[in-house]
Length: 497
Image (cartoon, rainbow, N blue to C red; front, side, top):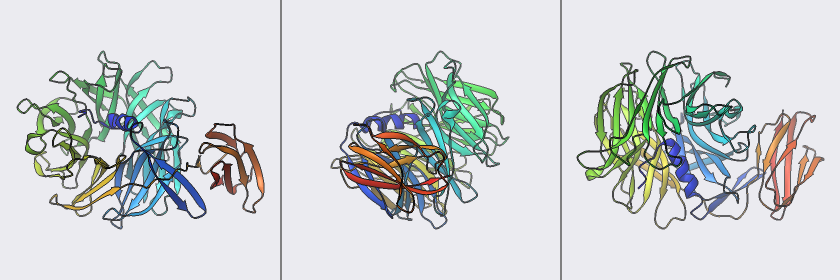
């Protein structure tokens, strides 16, 4: 089993899986718009609870023929995991969403990776703000317009500012390191810092970030000298001021050869310290287990504690969240044997002592959880992915527990197959130009006004699956794009601003 399951590695893991397994798909209808979505593997990532007890979460999947084409879908499910609706998030030709967080003003934020429009082939970070009521797009920005950045995590500061961490490279390619930036609620950049680990390593980055009681920030992540995702990884910690100045940093090397101990989770504590979630090999059992570090703001260790899997088997974590009573929630998986990975949720008290652990029995399956939240009933809701022997691909997996850790609901969410391809437009609404992505065999693109009159049209070069088109000088309003090709006609509305 892979022991490196940080936020960064999980993305790489699914990029690899997407080239290996067969596809499954769904034709989704939204009124008079038809999106034909082809899925190969799909995994849930990020979950928030709605006021009515339901949940919003995002999911990533590979779409269509190009290997590099990935898309994000937003799901709205009820309290037991039944789909109420789902919506394709149109973000440039390709995107991978990392998470979703709820704001205090009835809006939520989605963020993840896409391609930098100013540097083809380089990744950047997108952030969208949408309304809870109708998912209307309120803000859409790309951090890659500022720097090459691959974001892993995002939180809200106490004043509502947006804090993003990940891996960053300066525009002149001279600085590589962990990336932290701060934006106001409107998405305007306040500051950005790229922090090398100070060691002779090739790559480093942050997986998670938290705000300490004094208003400063601490991030945890990884550094490595390897040019691949192979082991070993080091635990990388950095502490920055409220205005982004580096205060302290530290690298913890693995205690054993060929084992990693990168940081996959971090939460602040009431005494001004931070609890770090990492992995280490246990000296007694030799199993690879969750290891918790309690660190001071100076990045010094106060204590460490192992969180084992069931019956001495290994455990791994992917998310660490603080609960309202000052305790913590962990989600991830446990290695029951060399074939099975079981979804796991663990609740800790304020001293990081275990209160309960739910290791859900899904034998002969590979199932693990990626994100977890505390629910209004003091239970837990987690989202992740699963693949059982008879499945043709990885599917979304949702798990709900009560306050005692007993499972009150679970759902495997998969989509049936169709052979069609997708039509997507970015950005939408449009100011001057937009990017249209469509399936192979398209021959013509037409733009209609609400009266059905053709306003503009473009011929599609043979073999092309995307085009950039201009809507400059058109009046504001609603228009309809229609793509005609070998698979018939597909249409989608667009708003001109």
